[in-house]
Length: 360
Image 1: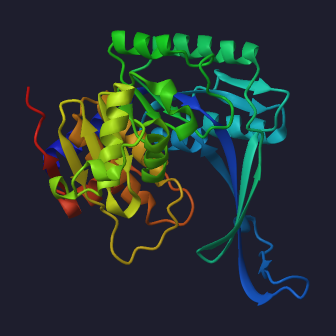
Image 2: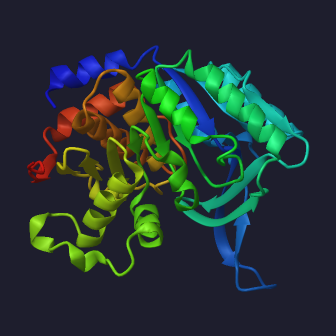
Image 3: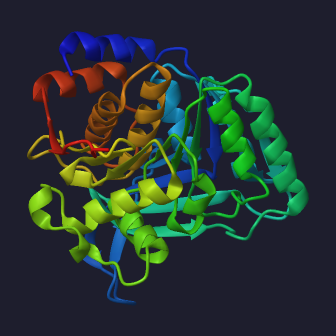
């Protein structure tokens, strides 16, 4: 991507209307230091400073995706569920203060707001405590979400699902007709799914699991007896298992494209015309982060790029750069357009075509 094209696309992200569907969470970070091992058990004793900076709450899950989208200048309407509790109210208020339209966030009195507490010493995450219910939401609540999604599509430039398999998404909340309606209206429908729900996204414009999720989904849904060895490694710089998973998921889901995010190895791109690309990582050597939120940043940037008129490779390059920005931080970070542009300019052309289009 040329510098001029990168700047053009990043400017075009501003104001794009995103219907964000998924599992809303509250993330909490506790920062301390370790100087000794507990005499009660073989565990470190974390000493937390008595300062406000020692604890932080931020939107997590789909909430983090929303915060990233808002930081890139998008107009965001989240559709999701929180509990009837203080955390749920703080989460909705936080997103509203950032500029989101929170009118489609629904309260479920039967479950808590999903909460993830991470305890860190320096840059090392020592423990994560999850408080959540992953039970399916009630049929009546699923129907309400379905209606909110349908109503929101009419005012969106792109739809993005951030799925963490916490019980919000199902065929009742997201029937296949909704994706078909989005496609008929020429609204890109993108999803970052968990393997358990991946079949919900048949017909989506873009499906973007991470590598572990893609391999799990392909193993669960692939033809019996077909393994990674079915694709000779000489056809691509990608590992055979990744190449097989990407092809299989793109075909089975009938998606326009599948992006497999691969952490430090970049993004593998599988298009409907049979073309495959490997977009190299852009994280700086020596940069120290913990990987939290990189996938969220990639899916957010890819969806916004498509809404702004990017092609698949351009969307993957922007997504890869957004993830590369976040990879440099401990904890979540909302990448800014200027940070993404700097990475793109520093790294230039960072992709390889690995396969020609399928003939015939």
